[in-house]
Each structure stands twice: as structure tokens, then as C-alpha cells.
Image 1 (cartoon, rainbow, N blue to C red):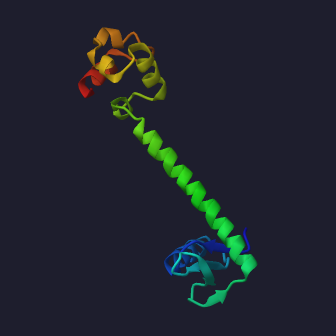
Image 2 (image 1 turned 90 degrees about the horizontal axis):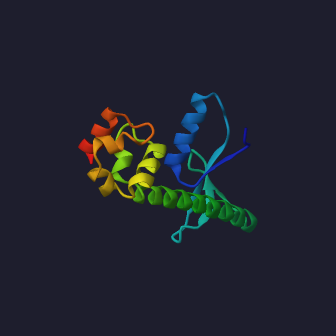
Image 3 (image 1 turned 90 degrees about the vertical axis):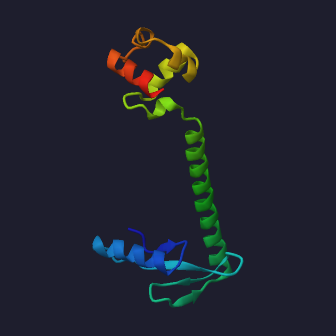
Length: 140
């Protein structure tokens, strides 16, 4: 278990973390980061709103942690956004997973060509039976 938890937020986050820890029977000190008007951490605070000033070394350490967390969060959100942008109508049809979608697109070239395909043509794709082919036609 960690010796300390730092929350990149205020009292609301501190109390939520403390509540979760209490529910699991764990008692770890939790401190939130008090920000100045430039969103830089100027102090730490505990669940009782007691502020603790930080040294220059601790400021630099906390800043490096915040930078890494923010970088990871941004990369994650970019990945999610990019994945969402590359979705097609096929991704929303129950029974069509990544493999079947890939096979369909490889065979027909585009969603519009899949839409134009006959049920018989669709059932020639591995894993697509007549019921699923009808569902594809209905939903596209």
C-alpha cells in the first residue's frame, strides 16, 4: 500500500478518496493540491482543509507528476476520439465484431458496397449466416 495519496484536486476529491479507503478498511493519508491563479500547486491540503506549504523541490516533483498524468490522460482521450472517428455503421450492428467487420470491408471495400450486396453474397463471408446477413441489410 502507498504511504500517501495525492489528489490533483480539492476537498471533494480528497473526501471521495477517503470514503473509498474507509469502505475498504484502509487508512492512508490523502492530500489535495491547492492551486494558485495560474493552476500551479502552491500547497497541499488534508481532508480538514489544513494547508501545508510545499518546498521548491516538492513543487517540482508534484509538477512532474501532474505533467505525466495530464499527458497520459490526453493520449487516452486522443485514442478514444480517434477510435470513435473510425467507427462505421457496422460497429453498431449486434453480431458484427472486429473480425467480421474486417472481412466484410476486405471483401466489399466499403460500407456502401456492403449495403448493396445481396444476402447470398453476405453469407459467403465466414461467420455470417442468413439471419445476420438480413440484419446487416436491415440496419444499413
